[in-house]
Image (cartoon, rainbow, N blue to C red; front, side, top):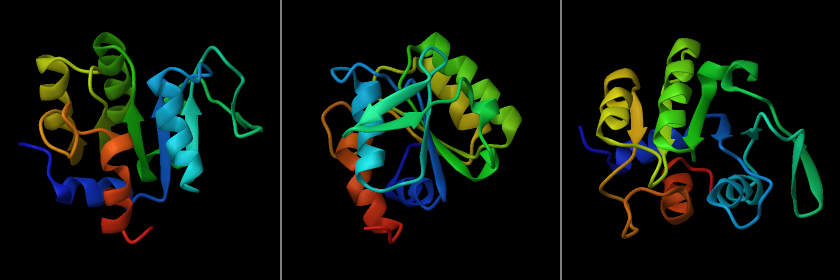
Amino acid sequence: MASTDANLRAFFQAPKFAVVGASTNTEKYGYKVFKWYVTHGLSVTPINPGSPAIEVDGKEIPTVGSLSALQEAPETSVSIITPPHVTQKALEEAKGLGIQAVFLQPGTFNDDVLAYARENFTTVLAGEGGAGSQGWCVLVDGERGLQYAGKL
């Protein structure tokens, strides 16, 4: 099952978001993707077990160590920016929490991880498609998703 614009709309209709792999390093995509959510005024929680907070535009945003620490996890769409072996563990945790929608950034999955995601989640954005040359990406496709969901 390929990712589609309908998946994009469904992902962004969630009331809450989380970013697994959110980073304090402003050069990393884990920071850039997290900042994108903050900049767009979305309710987003950074998942980073190694840092107590991530600063975006002078504001400290507290992190949580894992998806299990989220309140209302089933109502949360999750972006993942981690290496494939970490992504697999995050997906297994997300499945156990009842999370339905995941967005796997380019480079975060291999064929096995992608197959697992597509078998276990209602909404998956990953791989070929989207407006960018590397496949689906929040930084490239996110605003279109917010428009589809009526949030922009």
